[in-house]
Image (cartoon, rainbow, N blue to C red):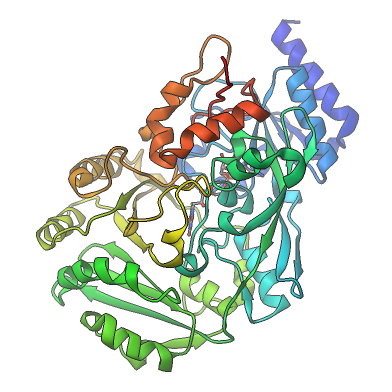
Length: 499
Ligand code: FDA
């Protein structure tokens, strides 16, 4: 037997001593493909990529600890998947040839809400929909500020920041984490106190997979009124979308914190989508005085509870609250995404040119999320997420193609060329990007002779996601995983003092 085959055998034997066999899958197991594919959200990663040699579906912390100890002993790395929404699929695949096992957190997903203290313990394998549902059941005056898509996993989302319609008032999901349970590269089970303040700081938005496996997060819940108001106002270019968008850039980041108005720009239309923490009666005067250009009126208002707004905004007006529990989503298109931050409003003429880009064949779309408010007054170094004071809004670019229509060359070329066109109009030195909208075109780790990712090479992508916080993240990584066991193409490299 070759030494690598012997190591693989020994890894499996080691796992089998602590983890029941029905939670382990090798590539020859009959259900390997269905377990792997169940949370692949981008069909382009279903084939032609390096897949895990083993899948482990732990049901408790001791299984996770055993996987780490067996992995270290046999030089098998682990990738961790919670919801599988990583834009580059790094939770379940590798860009480079590599022998690795995937830990699928799907069985560790309970949500325990304590309405009296307005806190909850949420396991990483829960989806945002499962978390929101449990919070909604516990009361109609509590909520949690995280992303819009109910199938996104808590584990990856919190690890990279996490924002949605409550961002301007309550910040990121990661801003509201008050404790966490982590299994580190030595297989230790740590909480906020035992992991140390630098690692706890790093987990909350700084690429969590670099530091270990987060099992659970304790979060503080936030207050919402019993009625919120939602509106969706589409404006076409012929109806004046260029003027309204130009104005939105100044208005949206300076509105009261209770009002969040995002824009989806696609084709020749801008869709203004909003959540307001209050009634329509209270919202109308604000809209009339602050943003009359949108022409929003009473007939646009839909009042509902916060939990009802979750399916309404993301899944459509006919979706029910139960629909957010559905973990499976239609997967008929592949996609490519990337992001930017805007610190100075883009001029009217440029918007006109942008609509030209959006009218081209194979064009994608832009999602604009306004910052400002309470969110932007948080210091840049308070958490790893640095895009705070001075940011007007985030842009997400996305393009789609059907699985049947090939590799998406034209759609990927559109996004690459449009991103190049946007360079003069967005943040610079570094050109900032949002870690949760992962894009390997921004750069990849270079692994040195000792098997450790290079700190200097990582700056290329790391300073785009984390600006000045990249160095502190690398030092936190050096404290907890100096050997770089938890590694992927964009994990934080370790920086160890004196080395
Ligand atoms: P996945 O399981 O793929 O993990 C992502 C990364 O986190 C991987 O590197 C993985 O190893 C690591 N990881 C996962 N679980 C971990 C754990 N327990 N411990 C340590 N590391 C772990 N974002 C946003 O801010 N607001 C939004 O509204 C949306 N909406 C949205 C919609 C759709 C359709 C997609 C595909 C994506 C988004 N996102 C988003 C982006 C999303 O926040 C991001 O992709 C998250 O990392 C996804 O987390 P998952 O657990 O689903 O992914």
